[in-house]
Every structure is written in structure tokens, then in C-alpha cells.
Image (cartoon, rainbow, N blue to C red; front, side, top):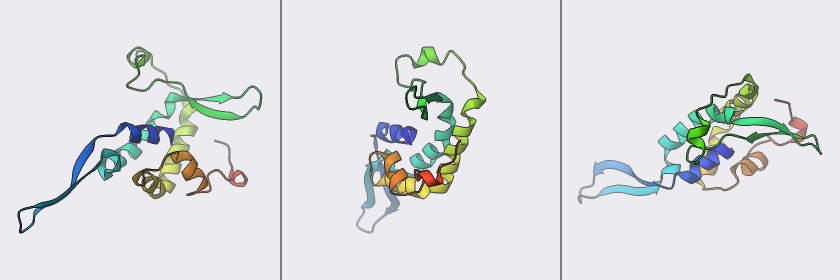
Amino acid sequence: MAEVEYDVTKARQKIKVGASRINPDGTQERKKISLAQSEAFLTELLDNVCERMNDYKLEEDPVTKEKTFRRFAPRKGDKIYKEFKKFFFHSDAYRPLKFACETILEEYEDEILSLITQEAHDLADKLCNENSDLCDMSNHTEL
């Protein structure tokens, strides 16, 4: 969800949407919406977001021993990005995370799209706690 939220906040551009038909009075029913609320943008975003799971690594907190995935790779706009991409990182270690990402998107796509179009913040928390049982610890399974 961090990847989805990042892309949505970067998409500040406004686009015109609406009917291409001209009304009898010569006007068109068009309005401007945020690119992040466009169906085409959101579909492409959700289709591609899980490919970035290899930018994360599994870390263990030394004190609590809790394991979490954290992003280690810079994003495309970061200064170090060009230098970083000269090195090729590929590992099967991220496959469970990619699979989990694809499964969550498949099962909760409508809820995710709804949260984005409502311009909700903290998408992960809202999806986790309000729109799904993903964070119910009794339902928890290891990746």
C-alpha cells in the first residue's frame, strides 16, 4: 500500500473527463479530476505495483524480533536512482511478498480503488483496519 499511496500522491496532474458528445446548446459535459482518480491511471497502477516488491527486503528488529519488509531501493525521482540502477538486484527472496501483493490486490481491488477515490490518507491502515480483516492477528499467516 505504501507503493500505491506514493504513486497516488505523485499524480497531482488534473485531466479532463466526460462525454465527448456535444449538447444541443454547443457545450460538452466535461470536468477536471485528479489523474489519481482516473480509472485508466488506477488500473495501470494496480497492474504494475507488485513488480516493485523486489525493492524491499525482509528485516528483523533486533529487540522485538519482529520481521517486516522495508524499502531499500531509491525511487525513480531520487538523486541516487540512476547510480543505483546500474546494479542489478534479483532475488527469489521477494517472491512471497510479490505473491502477497498480487493476492491482496486481487481480493481487495474494489476497496483499494474506493479508498483512493475518496482521497483517503494512510491507505494501508484504512484497508487493514476498516475495509478488510488483513490485520486480524487470529487470521495471520506467514509469508
